[in-house]
Each structure stands twice: as C-alpha cells, then as structure tokens.
Amino acid sequence: MVIRPQVAADREWIISTLEERWGSSVIVAKDRECDAANIEALIANGASGERIGLLTYRISDDGLEVVTLDSIRPGTGIGTALLARATEIAQGVAVPRLWLITTNDNLGAIGFYESRGLRIVAVHKGAVDRARLLKASIPVVSDDRIELHDEIELE
Image (cartoon, rainbow, N blue to C red; front, side):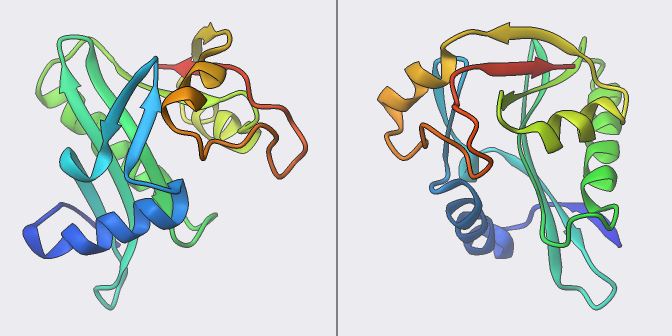
C-alpha cells in the first residue's frame, strides 16, 4: 500500500467517494460546512495502483483536522495507514494537535480512533441536530438504531 497526496487526476474519484460514503462532498461539523472535495487529501493506493482509501484534512492554527476518513476495504489497515500519515504531516508542520469530529452513533469509529491513541476531548451536545439544518440528508437514526444528536471530538 502507498499513501500519497492527491493529484488532479484523483478529483473525480474523491468527489464520487465522498458522495457515495457521505451523501455529499459537503461535511458539516462544529456548526460549519466544509466541502471536503476542495481541501487537502491523502489517497491510499493498493498493490496494483487502485485507490483504496481517502483521508481529507485541513490545517489551521487549531491543528490538523481530519475531515473524512474512508477505507474501501475495512479491517485491512488502510485507515490506520492514512491516519498515521496525517499524524506525520501534523508533526511536520508543528501544529498543536490532530483532531476530528464524529457522531455519537459511530461507535466503530470512536473505538478505531481511541485504539490508535486519540482521546475524547469534548462532546458537542445537539451539534448534529443543528448540522441537520444545514445538511438535511443527515439521518435522525443510524443503521444501528441510535439517534444522532451529538458530535464527539477526539484528538
């Protein structure tokens, strides 16, 4: 597997991946919208060169924010490799932290991030309810029958 920065030829794949997995390239977190197709991205390529993972991020004074993380083949180390590369980038630009937002229903993601050293630093109560006003496609109840209301911040 190779983790590399996005190039122009990845653009359509990034957009289609975000639309397929997130319902849109627009991500809403902490009461703001971000078009993940228009920010920095890391691509994971498999042995034969196929794209098998995507991590989008943005860097600010607050740190490196992981906006989206998608593994086409869950459980094979793709997400771990993408997150490790994002951590290297954060260290290289000397930002104070690497952080991200997930929703209260996303138990698999919370476990994934915590097992890789991230910790819950905040719970933003009602943030998903507010986000739904900006992005109506956010469901009220997850596939696991958990009501989506809150955002969990990890760093």
